[in-house]
Image (cartoon, rainbow, N blue to C red; front, side, top):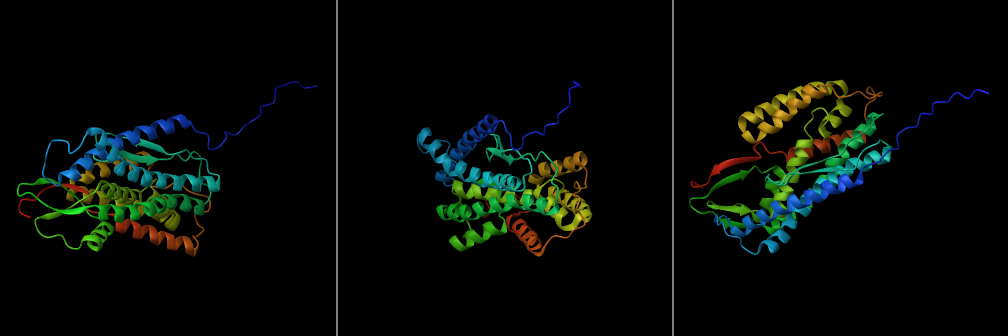
Length: 310
């Protein structure tokens, strides 16, 4: 009888995560976004006056920070869970969402992401996983935008006011016009923290839909165009360079896209059925993704301004 040990290959169980790490990162992001949300609520109550005193006790202000943190985490969380549940549906191994807390930024977070831990075997799966996140986040961001703008109000700008201007995506402009009409000269819409969270959610959706490499838009572009999506990637990176020359707030994003191009290469990883065209329903969804990008995009997200002349 042969007693030589026989090697038994065991595949790694799918969807196994260090749950404690995801919970910890989420809790830290709740804390960082709530702190930032408290500052946004204080600014909202200040009505452009530039006061340095707290408008209410800090504990009460911190509680109001949940207006922002709850909204932004709902948008980012639904975006990533859209990807995650699509992966679960197709049995493609993926991690739970990783949230990124950054308390020193205007947003309190740099977003969230999941790790897909195995190749995606079919084009339709790649498309569905790629588009599920933006759609899920968009579905939450749109009602949050209208609620937040409805809770905002028009306020008079001081004669000497200077600050930062948020670029307004088309959807943001539409919601503002429907709810408040045209803003008179010398006045501005004072955004409730929910509205700012929705604005950031729209921006995050647009960034993810850039048709570059491993971004959601890159997956969608490759699923629709196949190898020709490489030309779209080069054109888009060139476009981000142009945006950076127009508005400095694009410099960091442009740098990141160039780094992605260098590290991962311009070509999307191939799927075996690359030559098989998508069905009509998915092609329509690709057009919807393009529409989401147009509605959420702004050419100058954040820029300094001088409102004395307004």
